[in-house]
Length: 220
Image: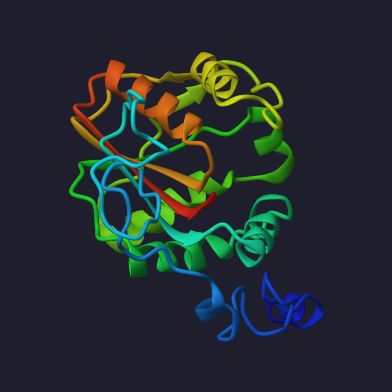
């Protein structure tokens, strides 16, 4: 292990400086999503509201969603290193950021957004699963497999929100019965289509309340 560390030293996912997966300079530079935020979807705003412009009028299957940081350029570098290059050590850094910003959900179990099986085979453990397991170590509730992909998700970029939601809804299903209260974990919250589809599948499987926790959130 020592020889590998000498040959391939740990580098910061954001600035590439050697030493650790997220250096002491870049970690505080990530923009935290502190209150006020929308009580339902977690979108930041000037004051707290029950429903914001992003989620008002939408029937959401999850009770609330929260993210730790803004999905800006630095966060994109972090997520890219984590997902595309398979740097598993970043799961602990991501979980620490989540636990720093987001109050611990009162749930029976954590689960994660299921990954595409082919991509998971190529890259190893999917980021949401790794984050859920790391949060289990911090918050104590067990991380369990509750969802699966029924088929590969079509390319989502450039699609309207309604089309995204329809594609995701058709590609996710519950594996079996779900606990009454569940925290769904993902790496990035963008439109909310994935979180809503997964929460709906969990609700159909018996969950009464689903909360969503993500590392980052796209802010419009």
